[in-house]
Length: 339
Image 1: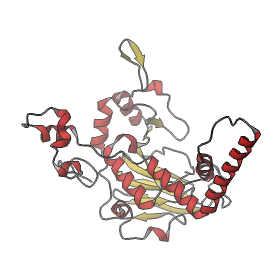
Image 2: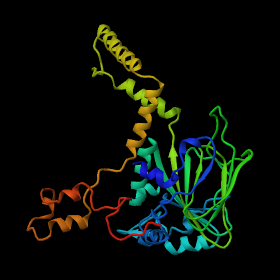
Image 3: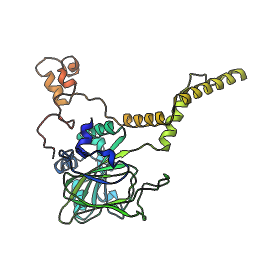
Image 4: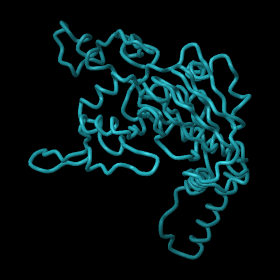
């Protein structure tokens, strides 16, 4: 599972800069093929991607979806939120940045990579994809509530990384007019990976003469609300009790049993174990479901056997059930250039 992290940082130890300072990594095998422009064209032209997974933005505003999402008619009713590929491309040509959100939800190679990185870092990982026209800046100076790995795929971007957030934890992930001193100014080229620590203010400008595409892998950390929610859940699970105890003695007994449960839970917990439990639950909640054979594998395994498709489980080759025959990014092992 550390292979995913190695493809971002190479042989440089992440621990040296984690949450401390921005850094450009130059790995030998960066994950630039997870979502190529060819893949993006295919996704757009499929016409199945819909809001809110896609936005068009500038530094000052988000484009009204009515400009690129004409209504469709399905079974006699209007359906909204599906982008028109030509309208999207025209807006990008007109100096708008295309922002694809939560790519890990809908593009399998990115889903697999994020799951592997989440296991390596023991934190939830999400993915966003930016297509930025030459000489433009897609977002204003802002702080993200996540550590970010920006993987440059095509073109180049000039990045400006400023100071980190207040140390007391009282800050908001949003645009900022007070980014602090400049900590790093760098041009990110294809195959390079920029690490931006959580909360460090930053902006990026696509280099003139080239469309920039990059994949942002955001590493989400637990916060106080996550700790409260998990602790509350542990305390309220408790023993099975009747909802309406009939007498005062019964109520007092129920109250005592609840208190005994709370004392037991608290006695077994400390800050480290509660944080570990929260991080584990965040990763598990976003892990992809266990793999099943693709339809191609299903058809191949049952072809010529004289059995209905529903009986595949008793005839499926063990290698396919175990996920063999797939490449390192989780795709079926067919020719595909990663980078």
